[in-house]
Image (tube, rainbow, N blue to C red; front, side):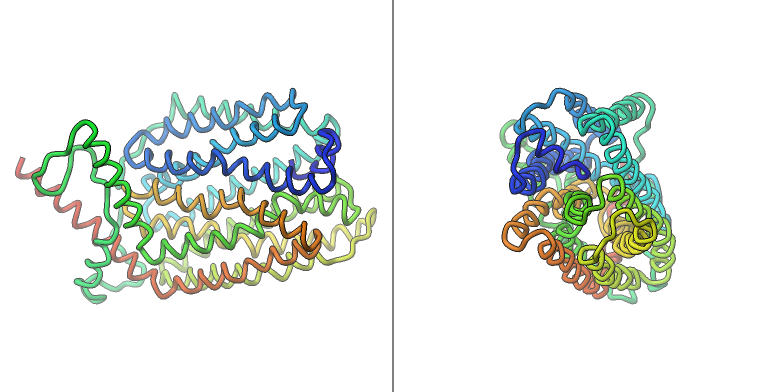
Length: 453
């Protein structure tokens, strides 16, 4: 939708004010409307059910509604079509990273997160290109159908050919600083590890009390899930990762939802030129994902604290080139000006995208394998799905300040995001060791039970 907000508004008889509040704010909230509960539900199921099958169904339910975009004639129809698409957005991410955590060891997870991030960035580039160029020629509805079909095909391939990996099969002892568990203080680390309460694997409970049945079992499951959630959010690094997403989603919401149309209409570039500039931004993000994934893994293998410093600094530095693109004067039709602005857009995409690839890998490493689906569902609520609430915040800024000032205020939200990431340098080492010790203790308990049996 981003390149065609104005065209969609005219087609559906919306005013310029409604263009930003409805197409920019409310439609993005539609993603959150179904995506948020879907993320939580799928995240919880991912810790106990087949993630491959869940992933396939999320893709089918999220992609299929886009085919019906050809028959949209009202705003309400568009709203609910985008809401249904939120199923894929909400469900796919926690499943993706839960699977990655069991396919690759900690020493490779940042690179794997980079590969996943490259795919996402390439999807953004391809999506902007399809929407900007195909939509300009065939109308704004056509790109919806074009992007729906590959999703459905991928879902069928996942359903019939992909295999489920073993949970926890790739865990390694924490070695990021070369320090031993005892050097840090075994009792203190064990105390932290107990905070991350787990929903036990099927057939296992602590103690000799049998699991409750019937209605009692339902309430027992709810209580266990609540203990798991509390255990996850009381891990300090996880809590700060969640908090930074609330702030960080605002500038990304502005860029993904409004900025293409802002360049095309307010700055006078037209849709093809503005789409070219946004593709360049996405290309910078994709390049950054490759580089920062490699560099972040190198830093992690030396000392995980360095990754926190790298992420926080990058988030803050990303404000400058993004602010320039918002405030700069543009010369429509000038190739030299477009090349110059595209260079800044590439830099903005590069610097601002150093966080995502590393934070997801770090989150995998501080979590127990049985908690990753649930934890990533909450991460999506505050980070990627936060982009569903972010556009509504930006739309309110626009109503008060106008587009230019509102967008400038939006990118400043990267500063508190960066400060929170910098603060994780003080918590990351302890939480990594706690996760490692908890997993090792549980594996030893399981092995002892198997020997007794």
